Length: 70
Image (cartoon, rainbow, N blue to C red; front, side, top):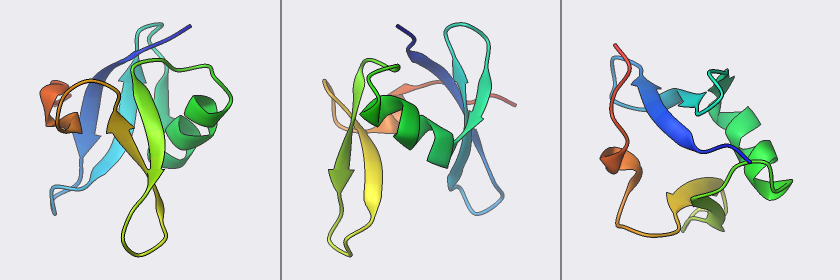
């Protein structure tokens, strides 16, 4: 099982990619799919106020705890 170890943001500050513990670089959408499939631990999928599926950490307050990949 993998975890998310780094994030990549666009110039608006939105998360666009993740780096997993196995070194894969995956899109936000792929991270959502892998989390729902049980391949990624430490995060969960939730539905925001607008009905969009989002990622949130199982422990902690936000994904901002994950270091940025530059």
